[in-house]
Length: 306
Image (cartoon, rainbow, N blue to C red; front, top):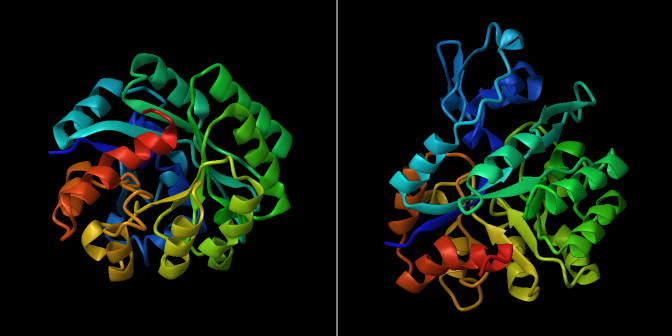
């Protein structure tokens, strides 16, 4: 069986105690009643990384950046993964607070990379409202801490990927020789999803032909646009994280199992159950060649690890 590369996980995989505080904010409280309803039960939310969060006292939840690298590696081994990307997600409160409501620290991931550089890829975050300081931190993360990727969440800022405030990031990634990724498709939180249309990546791919771009989270409900970008642009890839494979749009599954798509689609969990995500994907009615490329080969090519 093929070892998988998880193209979309997050910093709490190696430090679960840094997650949970986000549930105090309206965006996440609404999400627990809609798209992620199963995460909340009896007044307690369970984060994707196993931390229980009492919703009536979430403001007093302690921040704990203790590393659990050995535990994370054991999880990867047990579920059949060779590498996991650890994204330092930064999310903005577009409507309620107008400030960051999630800010995963790159230094936490840097400490994990020092312990297990072969098992994790650090993905620095980006705040398009704080361009200079974000670019400086990305430079440090790549040059000094060994990060190999930048992942950001433009939807939460109400910013499209072709917005001028994202272009300094793309230029920096080309300079550093690292790829960039961002969410496309609708938002699980109550955020303005129209800026997540995959076709908005078209101009970025044209303007930065040497930049490898990952469109994360399938692009649904604009699946056709997602497939179009991967098909047309040699530097554009896409991952299927945040969806169990059995729930993927049939149009995307067909594309992924074709000569047009199997070289460009990548697997990811979004922090969901590692074993279940991989097993669900392996049960898809697609060719063994497609499974090998989507689970493993395409991500290593995209990340420059081949």
